[in-house]
Image 1 (cartoon, helix red, strand yellow):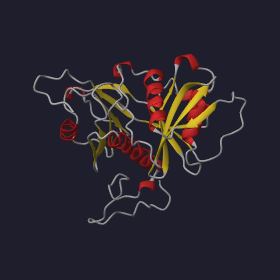
Image 2 (cartoon, rainbow, N blue to C red; image 1 turned 60 degrees about the vertical axis):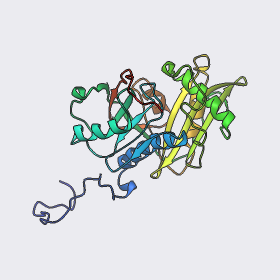
Image 3 (cartoon, rainbow, N blue to C red; image 1 turned 30 degrees about the horizontal axis):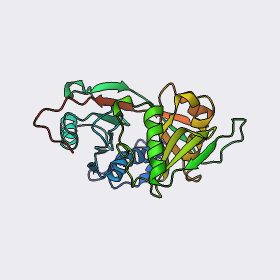
Length: 283
């Protein structure tokens, strides 16, 4: 029994019992709520920076960042999915049928295969609480913060080749990282090995936490500390904030060695884009 809640305590008929997901609830009500809100803010920020359509509401947020790529267009639920047909219809208004999107939910969802989505899995949400980087014997890697359009274009190239995202080729500068992405709340770093660009990571600060995103290392530089170096830079963008990220099961041990803890598993669905018809509009 929860301390302080006796069996005789019953709510009044007109009393609202907080679920933790009301739109007007403080962002820092729980760490999971903060993680949901920062993930929801991220695709909006990326799409807005590229001058592309986005939507942010009380039930979901997402951005039409590009026309290609399974991971290009995240759609993040901000509340449990109780009316899938209604929510997915709203998403379709932002992202037409030929555009793929990744649906991310902090909660278990109904089976969405009837709506044309495929279950990708249940990746772990991981958090590293605020604190300095511990001393280590990892190799020293040069890390530079990206501060201009030239650096951002280089970071975009490293991301697409390192992740990798072959479906975004041929890549045109700005396809993924728009020119106005660099703001106080959104920062990007590049790592260099032997003078050559090797890895990239981004940090997005929102709702009192730091989201670590777009971590990628070029194949030739893997195992040389470049990925860890930029991930540390992103995680410590604001040393006073916890850092959160969604990891793969393969990547989870890497983050655990950096002090991240798996909090819970989320749910990820993919709607693959269908080939555009002759009547489809393009941006």
